Length: 304
Length: 326
Ligand SMILES: Nc1ncnc2c1ncn2[C@@H]1O[C@H](COP(=O)(O)OP(=O)(O)OP(=O)(O)O)[C@@H](O)[C@H]1O
Ligand SMILES: [Mg+2]
Picture (tube, rainbow over the protein chains, first blue to last red):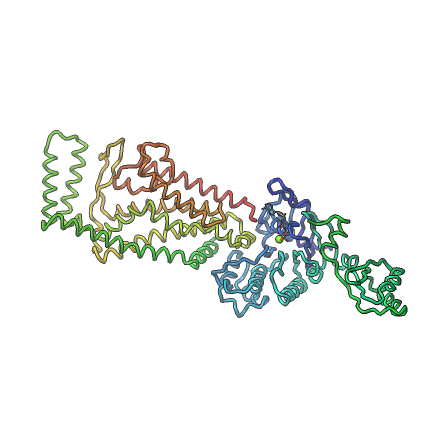
């Protein structure tokens, strides 16, 4: 990683009305990666994002976007940034096109030809001249992203981008984000409270709870530790006996057994069960819930 | 900056507020034109069949008689002389001072709308200029673009300035255009008296002089514009401070109406003269009406308004550039 980081957050803290809401958050995004910001409701994801985009000022700590300090070089930093904070709120009484023109005019470095590029990128050609008040949530989300991409940013920040979208919309969004990172070398910061979403979309993830980052790691590493296999087999007691010899086994709900996920060994375990005359009815991997993950990461401290 | 102001003007136009304002004015002007027309008819009837020239001639003779009396003060004599020349001008140029043309209507209309109607119209435009961005969430996009916050606010302020100028201009155009249908479009050069000052209970006439009506109207519209800008600036400040447009309107409405009420009752509560809302009636100083509180003058009222306006402007810009946006 010899390049300058696309986004660099260092020791960020925020106190609101005497209450410490963010307690020293640090992380960096390299160009072209999708970074997940994972935490339960009220963890401080939105507050951190608001500080990054300059909407609220940090109590302490520094934020650099493309090497530019958000506090001291605000306009330069913002040139490298596109964002949607919480909901994609645009002017409902203007058309999609007028909304984009509005934001294009705010940055003289954006040529007017860029408008058609981003509209095509998000696929809004057909409805772009309709008023935003007639748009569906998914279309607003896409217009929001078009707006965020206008200035060809280095960093794209999306706060819960799949919030309220249907499964097809979520999938589309996910692929779109991956594509942006891959093809435009964009760094994307995505916040979410759903592990499954982060898992499918991100390269790395920071787990945040109560205003502090508990752990930053690549998604693969995290999952490798945390993924489980659920077994449904008959007779259950025999299956348990055999599996216990190989790995740690716990009993799950509805007559199931839970073991660690260990890809190379899984066929072996299965074979042993079959050889012993156990009928393996079901064998599936399961992601831990966010809660399990937190329990694991914090070593037992629960989230509230 | 021009681009930013254009953006703001586009949003203002799309919100259709300006059209509503124009409609309101276009609806009120015929109403008042009719009222004025009725009043003139009424006066005519009272005077019977007498020609207005005869009445005016009588008034002139009356003034001349008073002037010839030796016991009157110098100052009063000067005032009467000015009055006399005004009356003579009317007679010589065949102007009926009681049958106004469109310019006179225009003048009366703005004199009566300076302290409540126009501030209300200004408020309707300005109240949601910033607060609608906060409540609609669009402020998050506006403030994460590579433009410093003060520039964004300044572009909004300039858009406000343009809208207010537009409102004042449309009041002028509409009141002239519409009332002229009934009263005729002439009368720009009709001489009017101005320059009254008040000291204690007395109306001082030492500085009274004659100006042509067009100049008088220009002066009054200047004052109207000034008052509208101050009311606009204060509304603007509230719009920055509060997220809710309804709250902004509520507070402004309450102050403006309180001002109208106070102006009628506070002659003994002297410090009330430092409220901005009792100082709105600037045109009264031009036409020489009594002030609500002793010690108020055109200069005083304009300074009080300026202090309020500047304070509002500073508060708006300082809070806007520092504030955390949640
Ligand atoms: N303006 C504020 N005043 C007081 N407390 C606040 C304010 N804004 C946020 N908080 C507190 O800060 C904490 C973090 O809030 P934040 O909105 O950042 O959470 P989040 O991670 O985005 O949650 P969600 O998943 O619900 O969006 C919450 O406990 C919230 O109550
Ligand atoms: Mg949030």
